[in-house]
Image (cartoon, rainbow, N blue to C red; front, side, top):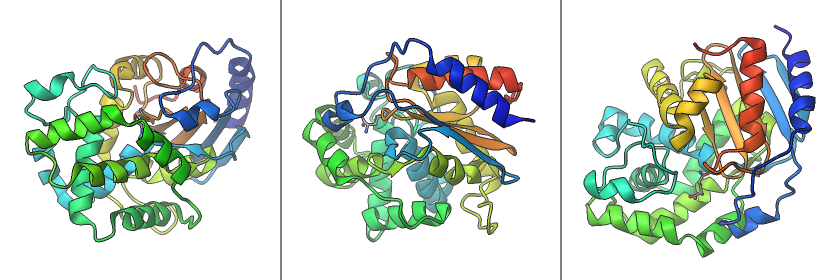
Amino acid sequence: MNFKEIIQEIYQQINNIDDKGQLASYIPELANIDSEKFGIHISTIDQVNFGLGNCYDKFSIQSIAKVLSLSLAYSILGEKIWERLGVEPSGTAFNSLVQLEADNGIPRNPFINAGAIVVSDILLSNLENPKEDFLAFVRSISNNSELNYSNKIASSEKSAGFRNTALCNFIKSFGNIQNKPSDVLDFYFDLCSLEMNCKELSELFLFLANNGCKINDNNLILTKSQSKRINALMQTCGFYDESGEFAFKVGLPGKSGVGGGIIAIHPNQYVIAVWSPKLNTKGNSYKGMRFLEEFTTESQLSIF
Ligand code: GLN
């Protein structure tokens, strides 16, 4: 498969379309990003790498980090984690409060904000130094000791984080948050503020294309079954109320973030990361979604 040619061709095509998206200005710092940035990077499990455009510029990975926090929490708690979280697509926006009351404070899935806040609470209860230990986990999967949080982004989100604060307090009222809400939220904002470029993202997530196993040293991050289940959740819940459309048009497990990044995984084959900061009305990168749709169409490589 000649990824290089296909990616180059689609990159040109999508770079020229009218970007109908908007920056995620509800996090003040994200409104300052250069909205013209556009980067792509693919990494295959046989170690082929190719990137284009702004693929070496770091950006805020935001909700893409929810896959990493879930991976760590799942590896610690095993199946017990599902006593506190559902595995159903929510069909609602990423920051919605509406289902929580009927569901007694059990978030529908780990990728909506409510679910990721519960995962943050689980990590706070199980890690000695949550902020440092989580970063060490991410660095160890990537073999990159330079990956880091952005204090600027985390404090910007915290300054305007009223909805996430409401979510955390509401879940706490049902008894599904064990720690102090302000500590849970600080940790959640920190993990959303992780910064990476497309190359770092596509390399890091290869363990989920490789049955939970790190590529370089065969270190097991997750069991095969856990890796399969996280891929299934990415497929059904990774794009909130646009998850069906992503499955329909792209056909890969994936996860987006409001920083404009998207990762998509083809199990046993590759990870592709795309970054373009303007978002569609569902909070997913406008050009990123378009690029991936063309990519799996042209390459004929989706899981379906
Ligand atoms: N930190 C963001 C928030 O909580 C993450 C949302 C996202 O990337 N979809 O609102």
